[in-house]
Length: 250
Image 1 (tube, helix red, strand yellow):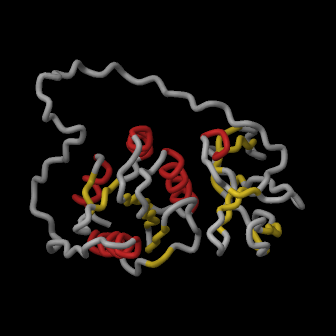
Image 2 (cartoon, one colour; image 1 turned 45 degrees about the horizontal axis):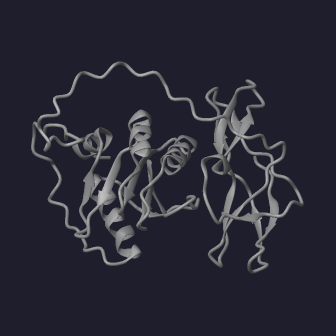
């Protein structure tokens, strides 16, 4: 179990007990970032790739890998970055080799970037009943209703707060809702996926403003279903894992 430390917010001087998340290494061993006791937490004013990640060594297999840097959300609204012992700058991301893509005919400007899977049978569920989105709470409500429509029961706020947005959870699934005007990033997708691996659950991401191109690519690699919430409250699938989730349900 990860060790808890006391973290004081420099903005409002509130003190928090913080325990970092324990995440699984590729070998299966639990890995927790070693927190630096007594060091002051720093407010997050601007995000960069280098600041959002930390390189840690697995105590079992010795593997070095990138992990989300520990963060804590204070009640005053400040996001705090918690210092880590032996903090080493993470290596730049390695772009995996990909098979050559087939030549695409660019003569058709209307060709969509995402082609939904064909539906060979009618969905066994009734039509989804959306709620119009006017506020961030409406976006969370729409996502929760959609998870229930997919077949997940007892949808609730997640115990673990995500780095951004709102977390939802139900038996067998964790979800993240980004109701802001900021497109979801690679880090957002990877953090949700890591949480799902820790809890041995599926994961789903809902975003009001869509996704950065790199986030969509990473979600496809990890098999994370991505949905965009329109203002009518209807989640729209934007990748194949999302289409598969709709077809199969919970």
